[in-house]
Image (cartoon, rainbow, N blue to C red; front, side, top):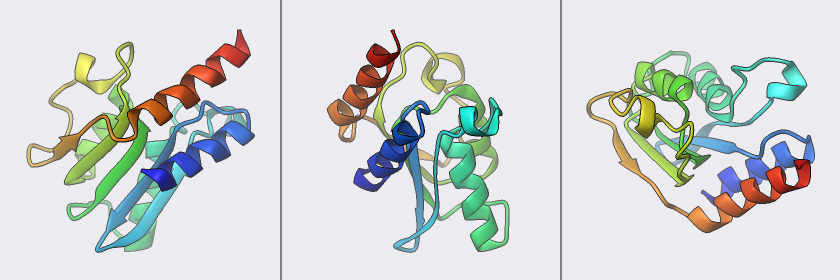
Length: 137
């Protein structure tokens, strides 16, 4: 999660919403990403989407059943769908997203065998988001 936070810091440096993501399989990082929605002018360019695309490219296939995804904020519905379709087996997130998180709108979006752990480095992840949005108001 600390490496996902570094990705979030990179998003912040680019004046993007500071969310970072890492995908690990077999003890190796196979994908990483941070929000690029402003940079790419693409509402789908979330950190998880960037990391899933990178991981699939590295492995040469669209399914990631042995992978763990680490993300600083609870995935949204769109990202949860992509996580489910990619068959990622474990999701670890930092801060909950009560307004737009998958648990509110699509709690069954992940693959049935996917294990979920929330609240990892939660305070650091939440504080990064709160500071970003305070600076915008």
